[in-house]
Length: 332
Image (cartoon, rainbow, N blue to C red; front, side, top):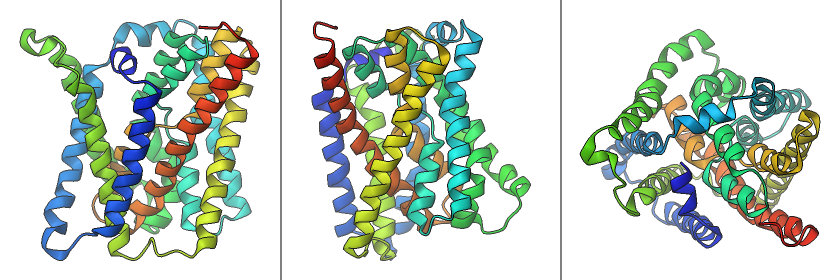
């Protein structure tokens, strides 16, 4: 994955954020019609499979082993990514969030961390890029097993009603195995084949991005067809508030994780970006794979918060990076 990260910088990250905005707008303008809705939706599982196939091709086992050389730190970082955030989300459910968008942000809290952008931010801030890469990749490998278990409390209300978790698990986990774990393994094994083991060119890093954009379009087009995006301005203001609030919570946790773990400054910088940034590349496929094709209403309530948070974290991360480099000039 470091090869993928090294090819992506802030201009490209900004370009991808703009592409997400364009795709969302196209989804609003061109919702699904009855004639094409069926076959377009069937491409969603294929897109998820392709994303994780290329993630597997970029998997570097040595980086994962290096990240786990200190089990105490590894458990601490992963606990802040999945455990502390789940506790916060659970407390918020007791307070009683009043909209499905709030449910979407509860799901955002317990998603794995992003890989490429957090490594880039870490490196540019003078942090430990290998530390960030290993721990962010580890969270993405753990996510397919943890996400359905952690998110069921909220996605029941969107996609499954009152169906027992045992029945959901019997449907969800095999699907996650086929769409996520299997392609990761196949992608990693493909590197052992002489013809496929060599880098396939710069286009290889673009393929997952194209698939993510397609899944984003599918979610927004479904929501537009169901009139789920016809919201009053006050709802969009609340959405903005949720985005900023979610970022503040995760930023505090990223800082706290570094302090509690007693890490040196470079690792603390790494931990901040690892904990505070959430993955669109893993998040959207996890949502689709977990909920299946049956709940188009639920897609938009979950994908829209994740998309907005992803775009905001790129902008906010660039601001944090500028502040860190201004505070400590000359850090590379």
